[in-house]
Length: 219
Ligand code: VGL
Ligand code: ZN
Image (tube, rainbow, N blue to C red; front, side):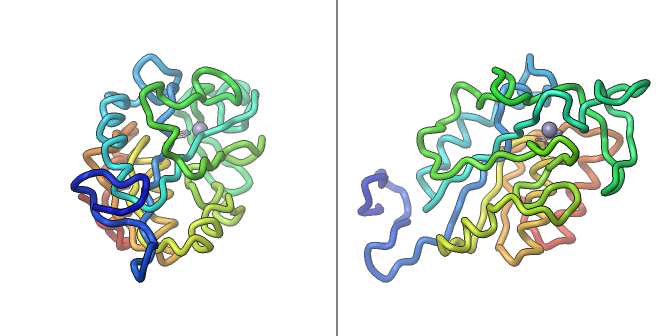
C-alpha cells in the first residue's frame, strides 16, 4: 500500500516518497448533470459510471476533472442559429460542428458535476468551451485544434506521463481528449466500461477505430 495520506489498503504505491515517480493521472471527462439522465444532453446511462470512477481515484497520483462550461448563447447551441435544430451540422470558421441542445451553461445545475462524483479528490478542474465562438470537446485543445486549454502544461510540469480516461461522452469529449493526448505523446488508456456514448450516426464506431488508430489503448 502507498505510504501517503491517501493510501488505502491494497492500493498500489503512487507517491514520490523515495525513488518512485508520480506519473499516472486519471482524467474524468464531463461527468455533469446535463450529460446524465434527466439532463439537457443526456447520455444513456451516463450516471451508471460514477461509482466506478470514484473507486478508481485512489489508484492514481493525480485526478483531473473536466467541466463543459458554456456561456449563454454559445455557438455550439442550435438555439443560437436561426432555422437550425439540435444534431444538425453547421460550418464554423474552424470546420464542421454538430449543433447541440443548450447544455452545461455556466453556473447552472446542469453544468454542475453529478452529485455523487467525488469532486473532493480532484487536484485540478479544467473548464472548456467557455469561448463563445469555439466549441471544445478535447481537454487539451479547442475545436480549432490549436487553442490550448493549459492541461498539457499542468500534466507535464507535474511529471505525468500516463493517462487513464473515463467519462462522457465516449464518442465526443473522451474521444477527442484521448486522441489529442496520444498525439502529444502521453500513454493513454480509455476505460470503455467507465464511459458512455451519445452515438450519433455511427459516431461511437468511428471514435473507437479513431482512438485505436491513434495508439490509445481501449479496455
Ligand atoms: C460533449 C457534446 C457537446 C461531451 C460536450 O462532453 O462529450 N458533447 N459538449
Ligand atoms: Zn458542450
